[in-house]
Every structure is written in structure tokens, then in C-alpha cells.
Length: 282
Ligand SMILES: NC(=O)c1ccc[n+]([C@@H]2O[C@H](COP(=O)([O-])OP(=O)(O)OC[C@H]3O[C@@H](n4cnc5c(N)ncnc54)[C@H](O)[C@@H]3O)[C@@H](O)[C@H]2O)c1
Image (cartoon, rainbow, N blue to C red; front, side, top):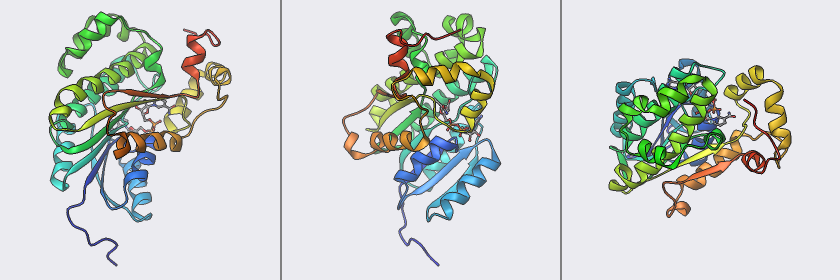
């Protein structure tokens, strides 16, 4: 049975075939080709199976988002499949999953390489979405330092004083800073490489979303997470589908005037922290 006779389909590339990423892709994938990249063969198989048996056209590729060459090969593969209309990056490790070096190499540098690599293959009118985090709002970085980050190429980010002297101290700090850097990376690309290709790029900063990654955080962080969620206006955790709804909007044509920005979707956690309703520990 041939489900779809259309050739030359637009390509959606997803780096990190986890909970949020696959939920976003599902909303925009009808009639398009999906390319999934992940370091975990198991995650790739599971996601590809779900897509395939729901009627979508999907291919997979093992990609290590810690390695520039692997990311570039992924971008090339996407390009070889057709016009690359969408790129979504959700590959990441959370504070309780890894040491500062790993978090910075993956969530910050790896994301930078992905934004750089896809900045060479995106279609005119294409769109990208990087999944950052509410934690990107938790450690305010001085304005001058942010300008320094914006002016630093991806391969030199690890040499910046804020990374060597602050972020490397502990995983929580590494994660907060890496996620703020993600927002800056999208801003920079929106104004430079992606602009040149007439493609848009934004970040979403989710709050606590129930996914396998979040389960690891709950197990290690204990009461802190519960108190933070309880203090928020929503008084609950979020779901990948809620992030996907916003993601589909930002990637879609109704968001044609939106680029280089971040959308915080946290149920009000950052509002609670900034107003002192909730005091962040540690
Ligand atoms: N779940 C939350 O509460 C939450 C909140 C804010 C931000 N985030 C961020 O959202 C993103 C997606 O997380 P999720 O909750 O959907 O988690 P998830 O665990 O479902 O997905 C993450 C995926 O990244 C993949 N991955 C990990 N290391 C990789 C590597 N080196 N190369 C390629 N792929 C790799 C994993 O195999 C996994 O499939 C992450 O960047 C995370 O930091 C999550």
C-alpha cells in the first residue's frame, strides 16, 4: 500500500527524538518527511514506530549532539532528503543527569553547532525551534557578558570566563547558563546566518514538563520541585502537548513576523520567582 505518492516533500529534522520533540513534530508532519536524530537507538526506534504506524513518513539517524561532525552529517542528511523546512532541537541533559562539562558540551555547544549547521541548509521561509528552559531566566547574566556571548563563535564558548568560572562550578548553574545561552544563540542566528537564508528561528523555554528527563529531576530534587510547582499560578506541571501547541505556532506561517525571540511556557514559575512569591533555593 502506498500511503503518499507525493515526491519532493519538505523535510522536518528533529534532533533529540524525545517527548517534547516528537510531540512538536507530530503537529506539523502531515505530508512531510520526518528525519529523527538521536544518540539513543531505542528512542529512535520507539519514535519511528509511533510515527510510522500513525501514517507519517519517517527516517532515523544516530546522531551524537556532542560532536560537531555528527551534527553536520545530520544537517547534510536532512538536506539530501529534500527542502529543509523545519529544524527542531531538543537534545539535552538536565542537571541531575550529568556533570557541568557534559551539560555545557551538549545543551550549549552542541546546540550552537546545530544552529550553525542548519543555518547552512534551511529553506527560504523555513523555521527553527530550540527547546531552552525556564531555568534560562533563573541566573541573570550581566548585559555586557551577554554581548560577549553573542559575539563568541560556538567553538570558543567554553573559553568564556562566565563558563569557566561560574557555569563549571555545578550542574545546576551549568544548565541555567546553557539554557540562557540557547536563547542568545537563536537571537544571534535570527539576525545573521538564518536571516541570510530568510529562515526564522526562536526558542521555547518550558517549565516543568512531565517527560523521562523530568522524572530524573523529580527523583533527585525531591521537595524543591514540588514547592516550585505548587507556588506557580498554574499549580501543576505541564505536558509535552502544551509545548507542542506553542511550538507548532512558532514554526508555522502565522508566526511569520516572529524571529529571534523566546517564549516562556512555565505555568507562572518565573513570575513567582521574580515577585518573591517563591524563593529559589541553592
Ligand atoms: N522536561 C522538562 O521539564 C524540561 C523543562 C525545560 C526544558 N527541557 C529541555 O527540553 C529538551 C527536551 O527534553 P525532554 O523533556 O523532551 O526530554 P527527553 O528525555 O524526552 O528527550 C531528550 C532526548 O535527547 C536525546 N539526547 C540526549 N543526549 C543526546 C546526544 N548526545 N545526542 C543526541 N541526542 C541526545 C535523548 O536520547 C532523548 O531522546 C531538553 O533540552 C531539556 O533540557 C525539559
